[in-house]
Image (cartoon, rainbow, N blue to C red; front, side):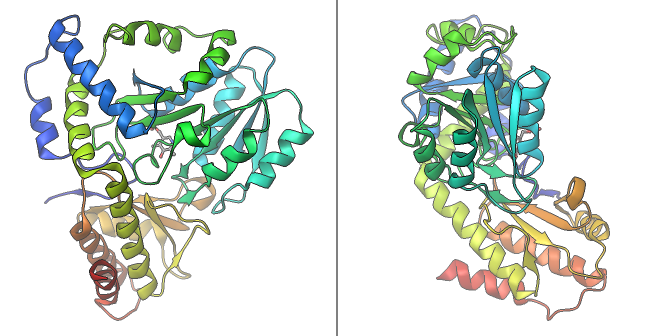
Length: 375
Ligand SMILES: *Cc1c(COP(=O)(O)O)cnc(C)c1O
């Protein structure tokens, strides 16, 4: 049976990209590789919409998050981490692991942090050098307004760092304009690759902070990556296969156009939301992201059983984590998918709900989604 990944990462990968990755491995200390890496870096800057530098790391997204922390802060600096879900918590935990005094802004899961909340904490805590945020909090399905937060942070001598691992490519994000010093992402989300690459975008003005940073680091020292990238090289052996795939997937993305990609993701999300509402289900987040549809499990329905049944029907979703375990179901819709995949997901959802005893009138979600698509 065909398995359809509807998780907010890993995602389905285009055949064209997989075929490219099946070619024989090339050595990385060769002109052939350097030419490929030069191409990839130009395309990455377009994808991140930046005049800054985008570094590719051999890690999952979390490695790139850790790289951000150890390169932006110095010993004795204070940091702020927004905790409104699992990934916001991760920023806090990484900062703590490096002994950074970290102030948490605890946000109710399902809601986004407000610029006012950030302003209040910065006013009350002099000495904060960086604020760590999450663009699309994948554990809850919430979108954060980084443009507005950037406006606030501009008035302080504070770096703004965001985890855009799932959100980049699904929502507008303009690092240079909005003043986001570091944007972190990963390969297994909208970039449509297998897991294994982390990305970190650094603005030109951010280098002075990196120069003064003295937190312990070796593999994640961005100064090494900067020196190498000038020669179209990596400081350590890069995952060549994934870089070959990346070159291909960036071609697909840039051919569609970033703005068109945002619009497609918005349409897919809108159709999904219309579909689940038509079944009498509710969205969990108040400020929903277009990366995934997070559904509150209705009273009397076993969330775990719903996830299991969906998987049996060939639709692979994600359940809830921690406090949301059994209370939500998350259907990711990024990566290699289109409008018709939405119908597959909704149809699978309807059949699975029916199988576990939730009653509604069949086909309503498909009707509502089609209505959105044809508008
Ligand atoms: C997927 C994801 C990550 C990265 O997790 P890894 O498993 O380390 O790749 C980080 N933040 C968000 C918001 C994500 O969706």
